[in-house]
Image (cartoon, rainbow, N blue to C red):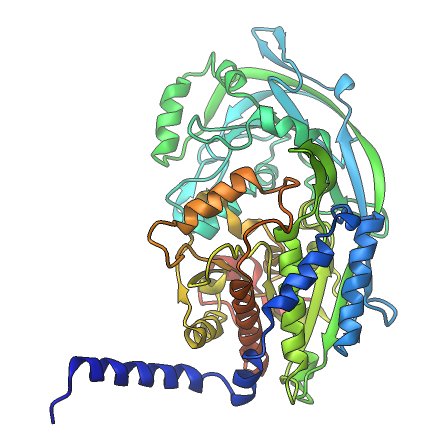
Length: 551
């Protein structure tokens, strides 16, 4: 018998669809088709409304958003899973800022100090562990400040920095895998402390236009937030580092004035990803004052759909989206309210629709499902770090996390970038769900943005819990519209401005498909016989993922 090519293609497509459908139980297939894009739109309209004034933690606007989300949890029949049989988990936050008029930095050449101008040539990061810092020490350059033995890279090889100040480039070697590049770009202070340094100086490659003094200084003046423990001690800090400063390009060149290696040669080696470290033959006098500015009553929200299996119901798949945004800021184009429609009313709205899909099942999945709205993401992933460190369920029983934050639905959802999937067995349900929905899977198109470190899923990774962070890919279905360029343009013009409101050209059908993905991945994970595991030898699994040590 002879078959036409078109018939063969049709048979193959039908077989592929059947294979994909067979991965998804019938109940889940029926429920996933009931997704409501308009419900996502309506949730976003309420959460991004001007009346909430940007949902900054500790403000009436955030409280209004929290009340709305808790009302949705209750309407869906989800059980309170916070503290004291409520939907709430209190998160104690504190803000510190540098007292600029009592903070100085000077370079010391041959015993002579050269003072620098605050805000133009340098800025300090607040030091929550040190109300006052006053240190003078020699400076050692340590490349990117990275030690990555699994990648055969170490900027600290052959150099002693104990009791010294280290200077390093922002970022990490471009040859590193995307997610490890993100991690090492953000682990400089931890690594400096491990090598005995007492202060840090950071500056950029000439090609790196991010974190310039001109743009970083206004943000730095707002201070830093941390969550504090019951004794009032700040968390996620490194007390061994007494002072940390960022330098302008011209100041970095001054720093290398007496170095045996010219700065131009250093830049060339860094761009070739060559480890390097050497003394700069200069000392620095760092004097800084850090003041406590305010305490903020942060709030996480936690709701549960109990599992149906008598044993596995004591394990949890956790969906997270941050509820907070930036509040009221400077006027941009006549508007000062940072509504945070995409960042992250969208994630909360999609997770609420995901919760509705779970609640619509005729029988709950075997494992329990937690829906957590976290605070303080914009302050440094604080609410998620607090929950992951102090969960309202046993930490050892949290088997997986899926975080949604700015999923980017400004075009049809044709492909996704599932950050984190390649590190654990969660890759399997991601591929099954994507295959069922006809969505492609793509690599990270913007590794230089270090996305893997920039949202709440990483708080769970730190606790050894496999986690996902799914965002839209670059395919748009329009050859004249590049999704990556659209994403980067949005980040450059709309991100963290009052223009992130509901007047943007959202594709709510794409938002609905994100909800379908969240539901299917979570459902398959909750139904599986075995809990997710890190891949053998995986970097994050090896560093954080010792599940038997979770407490």
